[in-house]
Image (cartoon, rainbow, N blue to C red; front, side, top):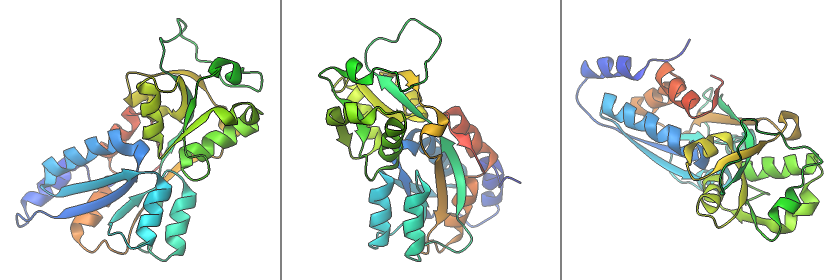
Length: 254
C-alpha cells in the first residue's frame, strides 16, 4: 500500500501545531527534475522545507560517510548505498528500491526524421559518428550513469573504439549539459535526463541486458531524527510522487 499523498498529508498537518521543519536530502543528480517538483508540492502542502543536494552518487555517499549531515539519501545505484550501509549510517529497516531507469545515446544536432529509435548493436558505428568529436559521459569509474554506460559499451564491443573520445563529467546532468550546449555532439545519459532537456534528442537506446539494472535505492540516515524526515521519506513512495516520477520517465518500483 502506498503512503499518504500530499493532499492527505496537508490535511493531517492542519490538525497539528504550525511548526515548519527542514528535511535534508542527498540525491543523485539525475533525479533533479522530478524531485524538485515533488519537493515543491510537498512544501506547499506541509510548510516544511526540503533542502536537496544533487551530485553524483559517489560524491554524495563519500560525503555522508565523512560526516555530512543528511536525513535521506537516494542513490542512482545500489553499490553506493551499500557503502553507506556498510558504514552503519542507514536507519534500520528503511532502505528500499525506489525507481528504475534506462540508458540512451543523445545528440545535440537536429533530430532524425524518423519515428523509430534504433537500439545499439555491435555493428553500430559510434566511433565513425563521433569523428573528432567527444562523447559526454558521467565519470565512468565512479558515477553510476558512467559506470552503466561503460559497461554497456564494453558489452557491445564498442568501448575500445570510443574510449579516447570520452569527455567525463562529474555527474550525469553535467554530461547532459555538455551535449545541450553543443560542447559534445553525443552523450550517454539516462532516458529521464534526455526527457528533461529540450536541446537534446535520443538517437539510440541500449539493450537492457548490456548493463546492470539501473536501480535507485533510497534510505533514511541515522541523522533523521524527527517526524518531518519520516513523513517526507514516506511521501517519496506515495501516489503523488509516483505520478511525478513516472511522468519524467522513471519506472516506479515501490
